[in-house]
Amino acid sequence: MEWGFTISRPRTVDLDRNDMEYSKRLLREFPELQTCIACGNCTATCTAGNLTKFNVRKLQTLVRRGEYEGVRDELSKCMLCGKCRLLCPRGINIRRLVQKMKKELP
Image (spheres, rainbow, N blue to C red):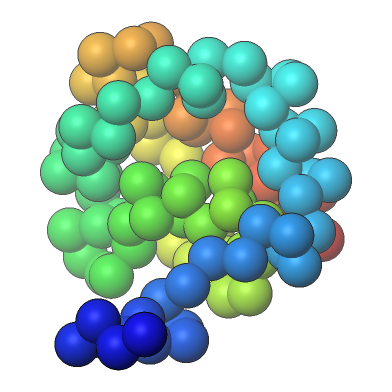
């Protein structure tokens, strides 16, 4: 059946093919990630984001989807200043999460 539109391949998320083990491990260690409302405060206040194309919210979304390509390079831009943690309305320790991902990301 033709619906008049298509979904472009690069924008689809295939959770069945993606390696979700690391993402599941992060969620076990940081259960507060489940409370993220994607408000964008972390990205809006980010010092590195103001100087580069670093986007904390995008990185978190990619990792939760099990898509790790390019994430390590992006994480290296983080200055670990902690502003994101201060402004998070849910109290998520994003700074500690970034440190953990820098250390253990596959």
